[in-house]
Image (cartoon, rainbow, N blue to C red):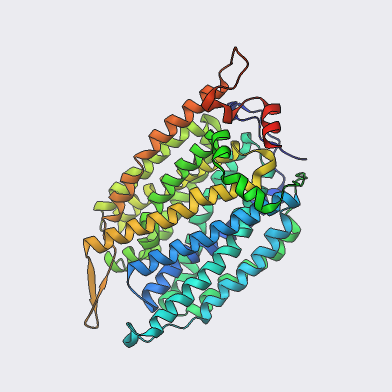
Length: 467
């Protein structure tokens, strides 16, 4: 049965109760979502640690790598998302993409680290270029499979009444993935067993691609006749932004939350291990992730009851409180408390804005919208956030000395800076609410209402515009 998003401009949280999702759908959401995030943990955190420990301690190298991979991921999502709309199918792209994604992830173990004595030599430049290039390939394949095809399939398979619960679960996936890596695989990285580490994660990802072929069932979305490149361009045109103001304001909120997250996420593992020197950092993170995951699941249920818009700002407030607390904590117990608030608030905020984005997604362009989502929610945050974080780290000039050599390390300054970025969220949320109210207000003259025209509550007008 094909599910469709209600006309935009109508309060989506008032939608009729959706039928329960079947066990096959839930199995696909949980398994594919979890393993996808497992691979992203490797790319977003452990690859940074790998580069820091084996290639270069320069935070600028990590910032450049994160930015390049984000651009590659965005290009992939733009193309594959529009392609999946044109095909009217997602299964092949999810299953085949995960297979290839696993193979490329395993290939990171084949990239050798340069000799420490050759830090300024061409061999170092070659290692950096090789890592960044392979990271871009991995991000291109992974984003096509996960951020484009799988995300569009989740939108196809859900309706507004159950998206809070689904996105609440999906929001926990990064935390559960981090927990699995920290508990089961982190000892391998501490022992320097990087090839085995990458091979194991790559193998799990590839096997998931095979399983996805049997779990994922396309939802009967009608193929679009529009050419893929034309669909990509159309999704980014200013006219499209004007036609869908609520959607793009929602994505702008996601962009701000993403920038805040990326100020500290690429450096947080390095901060805990090298700046705070927590001997039991893996245990601390494990406890934090269990608690934050539980809170995210509960938050998803609360979100469906109170409404996504009403849930968003309190979730962002918890995120800010956690970031501010992380600025001051230093010992094991208080790190757990502060980090739990920080991660739970971050995941709850992302879950809310993700569900809001699905509600504003046109039913026949679920794949195409993923490209705009990637630009706003992934590429811009991963370009801007790490650059801010690297600048803060360089300006603070914290360091440690090992074997007579000084190495820069992240300091606590990254957390208040990340909190400061979130000041823009309430402003954007107010603008979005205003647009939706204008769209929902009756027009006595029977004409569009300016800014609200992009979120027209008339389904026929919306369909005509998209056609």
